[in-house]
Length: 251
Image (tube, rainbow, N blue to C red; front, side):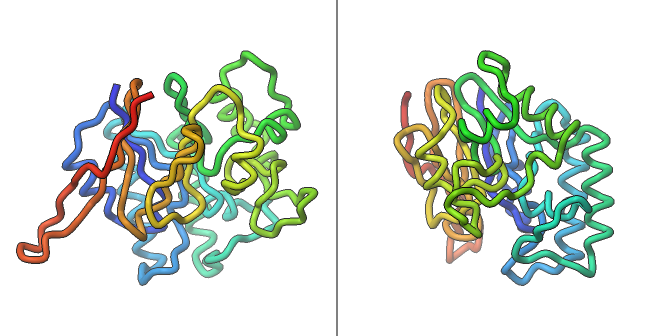
């Protein structure tokens, strides 16, 4: 089993090159398809996401689309809007996301063996408060909870009163790495985006931060025995994009 994990897109189209050049059994998109600090218009973001949904429909068993906070905050029950929220296009974005959810094209969590993929990470504190029972498959629990009780994933101010989500009570689309590393769900290697990194960052061999597309353009290859960090680079002479291995780790 070979899994490719791609960090937060925010409208970027690099994913098309990755999936066209890399062999995989499953590709996991870690969420945040909308909102950008780059020169990517709302229309371009929407079209990019529509292409991603079409790709999912073509390969339903091989493509996993996770929810991120920059997707979630377009739903009407969400009171707190995150940076980059696009008011003029919120109705159109909401309709696309709602339809994708209704069609079963998106989910909150993906799990393979000891690897668990969510947008921001799973803390023991939040999971317990959400009603999780030990020994139940965590991916099934989170995906069912998101369909039946999506408000459970809202931003909630914790004891830290952190405006950026740096608290162990935060949900799998909001928690920040510092708090996640203190209170991470035991027994898993968590692969998450949400917090921008210059390069893919591995914390205690149990948390892998992959929100790097806008910086080093790195992404992750996961196999049962370990993972590889791969990177897109451009040949200045030919202007061609290449994919190379940065390093790898064996579990």
